[in-house]
Image (cartoon, rainbow, N blue to C red; front, side):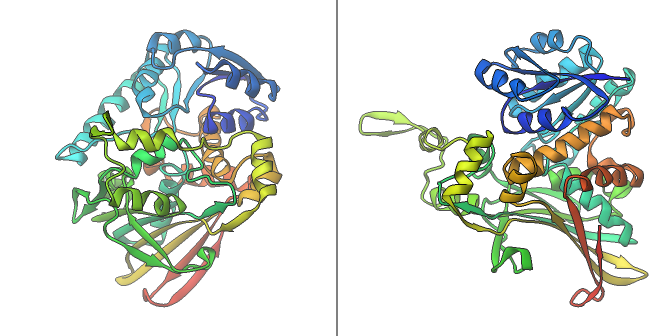
Length: 417
């Protein structure tokens, strides 16, 4: 049965998902909706099944109207649009996918707050027989599925560390390869960590860890960062993560190298201050000057032609615990196309490729009814759902290298998927 999809947002990730699912035989129409008429029209002109629609995505009723007759809504807009889009999916009684973290909060008890969110929307979507798939990009999303995969090598899990390095530097200055204001906001927030079962807000750029994996090319530092994985993984500790007690998210690379000096001297402040007779927040000033992330094929080609300085991106999940009563470390290295390969494959940047490909494959799972009804994230995938996801992603050049260290200081086995 052919299905229709509504994609809210014609930016970097919305464009990627639209083009990738445009090739799925089970999709008959893809409605791309955004307030930017030019972006929508340029995108759908390059598609076989695309249809343009100009809407205000902050208005729930506009999304409900746009969703008439569709099977699935994909929200590829920033976090403020999540709530109206989520509620619109419930009202329209359709499946829903969101790139955003399913929940963000600096509440005193983040685990409890997340649990309330999960339970509320799990019941709401089960009541209409549909699925809400949250946090469905690269991180969160892909890395959570990877963390779930590592659990099959452990009897008991003690600690999970997600380490993400954005290591692409080109001759053209591009500090962030996704929505720059969203990225910079994350560089100015407390990190999140779960330690001995309790959630904490951590000091930005604290908790430095150093790694020297082959894909990094050199020793790289990773810092505490504002991401939801510690909360979502720890919340599902007993059911899906073998009783994990400690979960961290650490971030490194070119974005950190750009933002940390600005943070250190107070230029990422959101508090207005007076300078030269004008009052403004320095964060807003910096954000207003950031170049947009490239999303069109000719832009990406021009950047490649100008030259790549270095590319040492990496995404690794380290899960430690015990197997047969012995200490064990499972390192899961995500293997993804770099900038040139991603462009040659489908005309995308490597950031668009990894995040958008993940979103497209999660969307494919929804369209093929491979995910159970209710509120679900890849933290909650069954082993069968995890395998389905990786079977899909393998078609697009993504894989895993699992390094098992037993004892922790020695390589016991290497498994390539």
